Length: 526
Image (tube, rainbow, N blue to C red):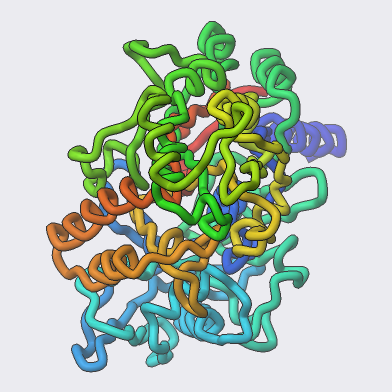
């Protein structure tokens, strides 16, 4: 071969490699706070971590069956104590080329069981697991705290590489949180402005068709929409309702459903002297005009046939088997009922404003800032309705970081009287940590340390349920009890829609985790 021919072939190969290289850029709500699956609590964190890591078992988005890319199968090893053996697939590799073995499975469980690992996610698994033993290079025996009739449902945690840590004590602020070594579809890193992902093809269990992905934090929704339409960006994970018509009108963009099983709420601080009274909370429920709030913040009018926003009367979306349809939704305000309940609670109205024990009631209302993109001006609309009913208010915007570190951890009891938020769930709609009394192990997401023994008992019944009908009965009764007690004013489920350019193909979106089957995604653009 002549030098000229050699150069021509070399150049052709380089050009070809560039031509087939594909990069997909998309907007998400913010930059992940952590890429370590033991840390991070936002949906952005969960989505990014799904790209970097494998979970032992995941839910197939089409069949809803539990599947695994890591494990061939499992078998019950013993009933007392209950344990299962996991048989791992051979030849699988981490991003750094090291083999995935049973040692990694057991290391991850041991790290979660280590009390020095300050992870809320780990605390959940401490309820399920007793320990883990490496029996062979590709065989791990996982010991449970009690008999479990569906082990894959508990084995849905992400695996960590044992070689990357010196101890099972895993801190939240290590380099691993920004530059992790995983085994998922993508490797990469995050910076303060974006997250980078590159295809991981060293292992046979992942062969993604997209070479690179880039996650950018969302800003002005109008700019995001135009960037996607003009092919500067390829997707938006969550499109605010008011901007969906513009994207639907584009022949080059597809709108995709993203099932988050999310519901919106107003949590009430029952430590506030007036809000501690049940009748006051019930009165506030009748102060709210949910139809008006929905129309002014999301654009959905009463009677719209294709509403992307449906009201709820309790802590589940209406499609959930746990939703109690016997509990009615309060759609419109009822000033007469509200006033009767306030008077029953001992409140007195002076000069058009309600007082408790001789003092005017002023409520400090906070809302997570990122929610304003989905329901613009909601906090002010709620404040206006309270003012019209004779309740003074002060509205405060809560940063995403403050929500994570202060509100979710129950440290804002002295700062807010009401907070507007949204909870999102996968197939597991367990709300126990939201409503159980705060203890060392329970009630980790109980925002204002609400406590009710009857509620706690229903949550225990759900945890002890061994049949689906028992679980349903416990949560149906919980729904009814919370609708009476109202530590939360329940608002609605607001559908989440993604937008992707049509050059991004086969992009099936998984409920909750989003990118579980990203290996099948492809990009046909340039």
